[in-house]
Image (cartoon, rainbow, N blue to C red; front, side, top):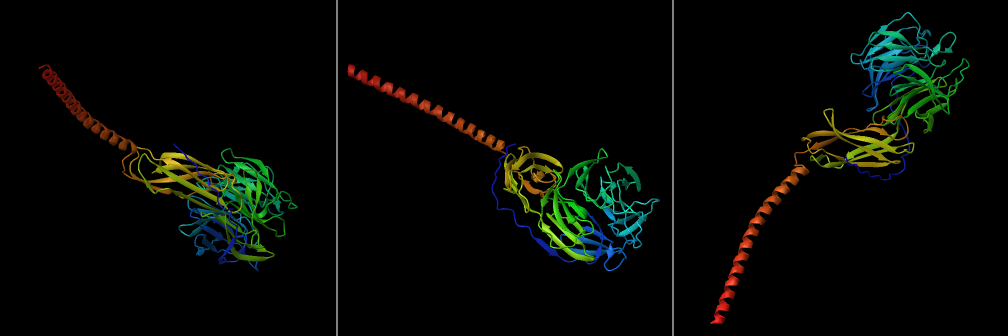
Length: 463
């Protein structure tokens, strides 16, 4: 495979700017969220402003259209629950607190398609404010949190298996932690920040859970703590943290954590003093933050931030077998300088790969390469997939480009064209050979005539 790289400089990263979207249709604090595969976000519960009562409202938010859809009310009105969507089409909610400050409610299960709720009770208390995230397609890890009465950080971890609807023990955290943030990246789960003592001493640590091995370890240390907030692994490969960094005092925080080295990337100040709201990532390269609380005032505000600009295209949408097409890929972060970029491009159809090449660039820029189309490739509609993108910052492989359509035509291959030329040359050679034979005969006859003329002249002179 021949690869030719073209790197061009691009303007400096575009300035980041928060955009305010429509307000949430409800006003609660401590609501639960779960992002669905189609990008929509489920909201449920929370404490109503100016009251100790909780809400049982359920809403579905579409970040693409900035619209809200009211769904079926939950059977229990809970706050501070952890919600996780699973591939079986259900959202599972754990460890919520009711209006009487009781936490022992089992599990609420919401069927997204049917818009219906069920509850499953268990004979034990799961604790409070525990972090939950999917390990795989059927298991949910519940880690850390706090034991109520008195409030103490917790090291216990359990796994809920959605196939059998029951809990199983998991290796505990290396030490008790509560009020942190947990995200999954690849085959690892990360527990970020939290507090690790009864006096709310803040944690700077990042713990890593090896999913295949089922083992926790201390992974790294951040330069800043993280507490009582929310976080998401966004489509730029960074974990974006939105929340508070001081106990009992709201200190607005907006940072991006690079899990490669636990470094904190600075971000633009959030346009709100509310903290401990929710954050989600969108497929079009944005993060969206929702609500929060500021000195007992509950926010309904929603803000969106673009993380990067990206584009990919082909030099031509159709080509013939045995030719090549130039692939272009561009990624420009809006907040940090790219540390170079590498990626792979694949020519595929119906799950079969027919060719590939590697792309690379240094810094922000456009990488391009020549992707060869096999000579024996049949005509039809194909796709060029650009994957394995690595910008040198954040978790690699998270950035995605839309598939690029490529039509392979029935045009003759270069080999076919060469064969045609060879046939033409052969015919020309035969014509030339025939003409050459005729020319040689003419020359011999001419020479014979000359000899006869000379002989006649010589005879005449003798007479």
